[in-house]
Image 1 (cartoon, rainbow, N blue to C red):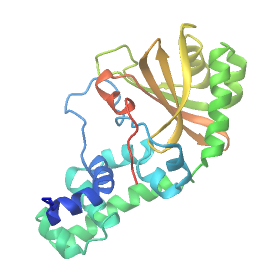
Image 2 (cartoon, rainbow, N blue to C red):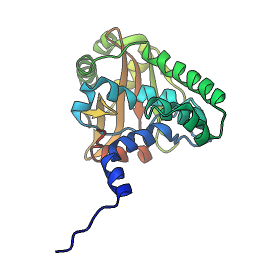
Image 3 (cartoon, one colour):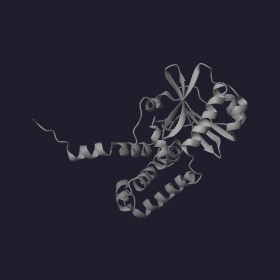
Image 4 (cartoon, helix red, strand yellow):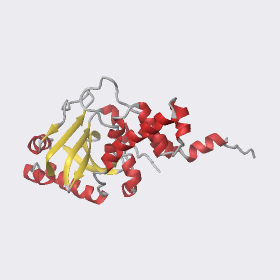
Length: 245
């Protein structure tokens, strides 16, 4: 019987496929130069247990990916190569064509931006699920008063339609304005819990089709930001679960 051996390079790739996917997802900015309206990262359907791994969940969270997107390509590459792979500055300098001194400075700036996000504190998956359950109930019952109880006064609703589907071209800010938008969701739609980018989230369905993926940011038990991805081109990551481990 003939035995087919896998070459070492392929074997290494298969062994580290999930890690490489995560790194590539963090490193590659997908924002076109002329994007219509707010830009949000592509949502990924992830396993529920990812939410319990705080470090892993935070590394692919919408919030961190949005911070990374504010970095230039070189800054993002330096950050990922240093923070994820822990490569020496000399190797990173060779990879990006910069001096070691420049790479150290770039890494410090990039790290400072991400740390500024993380300093706001990491909310547990249980707390996020509790807030989302209250949010879902308020939206489904069309109860604006219940929404006011879960939304922070300065809450922002950021919608990414990519110029393809209807979406606000700027964030909707303020609890009354956001509540008005949310209570306008038709009764024919349904909200279903899911795990997206390592955190509990909600998915808005019309029949058998996904219309919107909703993720939230929570501070002091209240929802301070709602990210709504509606661009159909970005919803393919919700078709099947993405393994991150």
